[in-house]
Length: 151
Image (cartoon, rainbow, N blue to C red; front, side, top):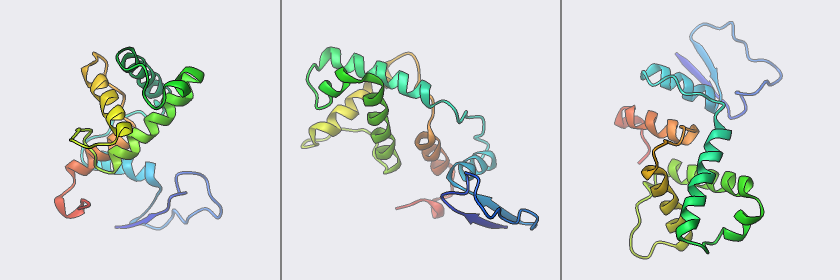
């Protein structure tokens, strides 16, 4: 089986790949993730849930701000809650993909401490944050054989 991976292959591109070849799969990041989820029996996640994720993250930020009124993003959140929540959620996803487990240690920067605290608010809430690309990727990564994982 040959995999041809390209970061833009999830979107229509020209010229179209030759899909008539047998034993060859053309995937971008999202399609590769879906294929791996199917392969490991983890399929069933919706791809169009970003608006729900942002809203739940916004609510978690509001809960966090009730106890911590002046974090680094307070004025930005006051100006545009949706955009600030979307940006902080994107940073959270980047940190998750980098392997951070949102644990806090002595000497951790204040901004990372805020993001870890928001994550704790999410974990303590009754509703679970819908899985995004980063969450789904880390789940698949944990199910891959150790020879495929990054160090």
